[in-house]
Length: 301
Image (cartoon, rainbow, N blue to C red; front, top):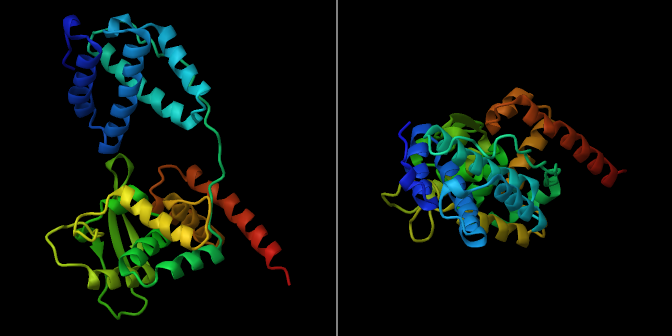
């Protein structure tokens, strides 16, 4: 590991070296690089502006304790604080590996407890209404159908290219397709596309404008839809359908929960979602049970 000298151990010199060297050496995924860089920048700005620290050697453990206590006072969620701590921990690990500091100040600090929130799942009535709202827009219908039929993440759908799709010939009843995505940690996986997803995506591609852009989902200007743009699209249809407290990620939870409720093997669902642990997927068993209870109660004869 290349080291930076003591004379270059200013906050922002260290920050740049961390980004350019450590992140590259560790081969962090792009999303991790962006997240860590943003969280670390906020931490260093706090040290510089609120504490007056200019070099990494001036940082004391009390500065770390005070910073995370301040995040708590501001009402930041446990998951948010845990993510920020991971970024700071990575930064200090780099400084120690580079012999800039002798002692890792964050080592041994307790990780913030994360609140356990029950995921929001759309009922059958809600996802039928959602589909109805977008049925006249081939692109948006394909987007929402893809989320509902595969459980893909927002980032995975936003980065889809035409070469990632394998669709059966149009008009082939009941045929299965496939989509290959870049998941968390740069792990690629292939997810089956059932006939509903194939039908919706094929119908969109038949209307998709001719362009050199390789992204599957395009804006009106012919450019790749950004994750934020996809969020806005889904939110708009949610509002039109009268669905509250829901987001793009709700569609992923909806896919998994309804798959469990209909008896799909958990290993199949795990593979589709890209979970590394079956324990994570098992969360949807209790959600499916709750959903069944609610629907049987609401639809009592």
